[in-house]
Figure (cartoon, helix red, strand yellow):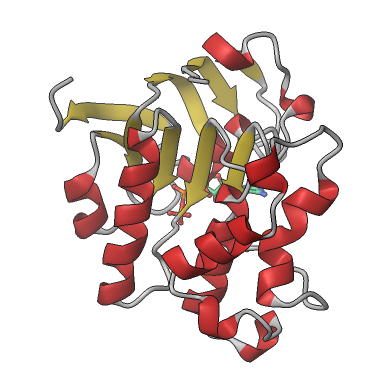
Length: 228
Ligand SMILES: Nc1ncnc2c1ncn2[C@@H]1O[C@H](COP(=O)(O)OP(=O)(O)OP(=O)(O)O)[C@@H](O)[C@H]1O
């Protein structure tokens, strides 16, 4: 299952009259098997673009389409199995433990899942991979910001979606944990997934396959760092 995401001439303004546009004619193709980083200064439109791609916001004009195995799927049909989404606000459920938050996409799935995904063992695998096993039975409020961020990433990956979108996935992590998360993201992209993240962090930008830099709602550069 591979997915190419095509963003074509996307325009978006959030507010009322006089508000500057957040996106001004953005054209990008995101490829499967790659970790793409959306970089650029604060306010350049990275979160807006990710949110539109994730189906959480609408374009004013232009289009976002999902080719190959998600062809024809519209944003409202995106679910945890098709797309993992890690918002900046994390949105963990306070009344569930860390393990239960990671298991949540299994509970919410309305489609029959392959056996290995339905199995609770898979939750333990992701907890371990993101160094969260020792926190499995705690509630989010009893964990640090970085631990909550890794929990939200484990939740996004739990159903092994073809697309992973993550807004600043290392923003709350210490340097050591940034490495762990980057390893997970790169390994995940190498399975054929389309992985798109936003980041300001030079460490993160350095390991990206492709870096797309935005400024004032436009793409100002696109640099491929890995040969295909
Ligand atoms: N809900 C909103 N209402 C009004 N304006 C908004 C809203 N969300 C974003 N904006 C504006 O849209 C522009 C792009 O914001 P966006 O959050 O996409 O940038 P960003 O590059 O992700 O920034 P950061 O790196 O700080 O997260 C900014 O000018 C911002 O002020």
